[in-house]
Length: 170
Image 1 (cartoon, helix red, strand yellow):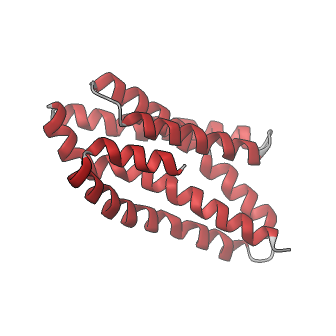
Image 2 (spheres, helix red, strand yellow; image 1 turned 90 degrees about the horizontal axis):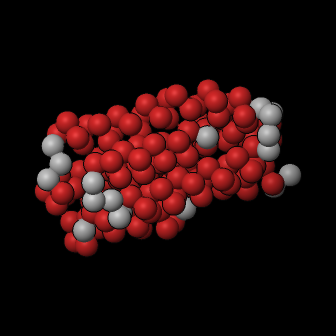
Image 3 (tube, helix red, strand yellow; image 1 turned 90 degrees about the vertical axis):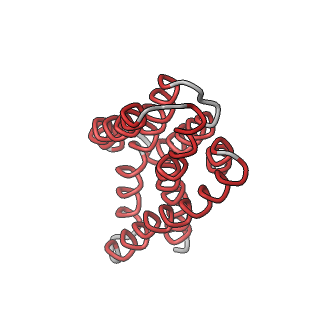
């Protein structure tokens, strides 16, 4: 019986990282611009690549989540986007950012929500709304705390270390 609440805690932590990883780029963007000399259009392309990739893959992720082990999908997704986030700290060119930050991170994150929401709904049939709403709070904690942490790390230790830190947590 406690499993369903342990599952919620684990998925909350994963969703926290999902949202935190997504927020890092926006927080350290001025440092990346200064360090690598990327234009606003190039930085916009990087951010857009993540959203486009995510948006295009979410329906596919839902289809796959209905046919395969959601637990395995979640594990692979978390490892994949965390490695992509960690690797983003090594980026020095626009194409590297588009591939690692935009496509790999966005692609890995796209497979999280359909399987997580389905798994939570399955294990919380009588309190589904409560479980899903608690899970959703990870979005806001991820955005707020990653902004503070990534901003501090980026300012004091370099933008790369913000990606290394959050990628390592995954």
